[in-house]
Length: 116
Image (cartoon, rainbow, N blue to C red; front, top):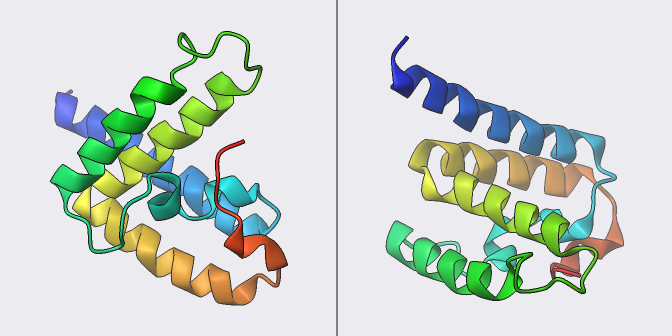
C-alpha cells in the first residue's frame, strides 16, 4: 500500500480521538483548545504553529523534565494539538467540532487551557 494511505489513516485516527473527547464532554480542559495549548492565535499559519510547537516541545520534552511525572502525558497532548492544527483539513474539521461541542458542553472550565 501507498505510504500516503497510512499517513492519512493516522491523521484520521488523531481526529477521531479528538472528536471522541468532544463528544464525551468530560475530558481534561487542558486538551480542549489546541490553539491555547500551543499559544497561537486561531488565524495562525502553519509556520507560526510549527514555531510554537518546536518552542514548547523543547521545554516540555520528557527527557528535559525527568522529575515531572506528567511530562510524557503533557508532551503527548502537545503533539496531538500540533498534528491536528498543522493539517489544514483536520484543522477545519477540528474548528467545526470545537464550535459545536463547546456550545453543547456546560462545563465552566473551558477557560482553563494550560498544561499541568
